Amino acid sequence: MPVCKIRHIRLLAAVLAVPILVIVSLQTQAEYADVVLNRNSEKEGVRPVVYPHWFHRIRFQCRVCHTELGFEMRVGANKVTMEGIIDGKFCGACHDGETAWTVENCDLCHSGLPGMETGITGGHKTLGPGNW
Amino acid sequence: MSIVKNLITPAATVIAVFILLLFLVNKESHSADPNQFNRLMAPPSKRNPPPTEDGIHDGPGASMLQTPKSAFGTLPKSKSGNYIDWVKALDEKKIQPRYDRNDPEVQPIVMDLNIVHEVKGSMPNVVYPHKQHTEWLDCSNCHPAIFVPQKGANNITMASILLGEKCGVCHGKVAFPVSECRRCHSQKKKQSAGAKAAAK
Image (tube, helix red, strand yellow):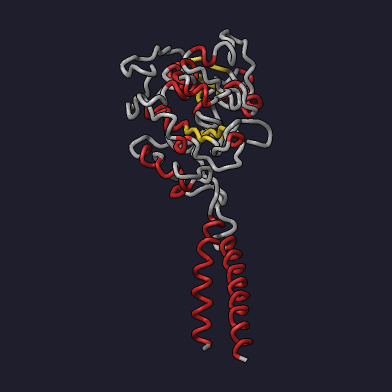
């Protein structure tokens, strides 16, 4: 009986320890310059958008979005809406089914963890006192 | 009697598991050397994690996105940011980002002009290369809103950069962070006559 009990405990401990250790070791390691867009997303019942700068800069120079498409270089300064995107503004200039995937692939952009605030993530920041 | 025994056994098991877990959690936080270097920094193996593990992604789409590591494989490395030297990657033609949204053949209008900012402190002078910047950006991205295109018209301080103004609009957010002091502060100062005399 004692041997059986010890085995029982060991098994249970092993099973329960896995998620606990995962939670302990889980930290935010977002990629540098990932942008969270959550002005409207969660209000409208979808996940926040995560925009990866690294992915886009491999394919386009900064100027394409920040001049041609009119994205201001300040978080929160761009009022990106789905209506605008469908009309070909902002993300919609490329996410039109020709250059990049269409707006029907909601989950690919709206893939952020619920509850995140609009802003730049991923470490080093020059956003203001205390943030550095 | 057997009912009591049947109740005690699971109860004891649960308590034992709880104590074990507490021990394990406690051990986790103390397992590594508490006085190690860079205790809170991600070790190289944990850098550039896939979207499913980076702590900001969620939902079914995350697993379909490209992982940074698969994209960064052949690109030159750096010590901070994405751990990629983007300027070098462009120089070596490891990446060919489009200048024009639709036409991959259009070449950027590059201006090769270095601006030297003589700094007041003991740090080397700042050399600002237009070349590397115009390979990515248009003039209008910086001029005139961020920098007045006139010599001496811009009062640039590290304080304003750290507050996200001037160079800090990009550096520290999307371009290499200001922890890379010597990438900007790169020109050795000429020693003044007074300083030379003092050294003697």
